[in-house]
Image (cartoon, rainbow, N blue to C red; front, side, top):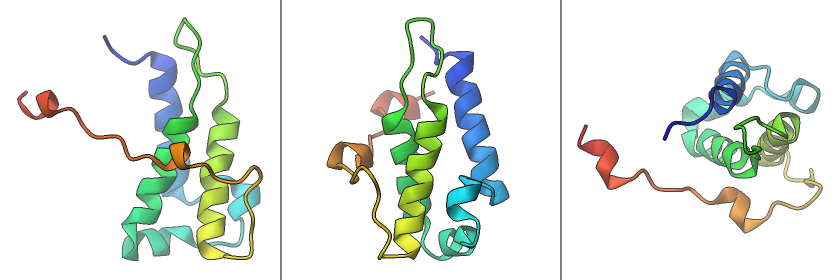
Length: 108
């Protein structure tokens, strides 16, 4: 089984905007998060986890909530930089889970 072209596209688009410094532009407009990521990569890792853990797809593999996922990740980055910023809704533990890579993936 492979991920759908729509999930691939969502991850590609998120990655492009993330590394281009334009992720969640309205939310992160004045925040130089890329400098932080260079010094504290776990901030970026968790942003990707939040994006992926919130991603919903239908039975055809189409992404149903890309903008929501991008905004959740951007809000997390903003809260990382501005501790007075409160995410709405509050970040839940399941959103931040760092899923493992399967052991089998290292054998190919």
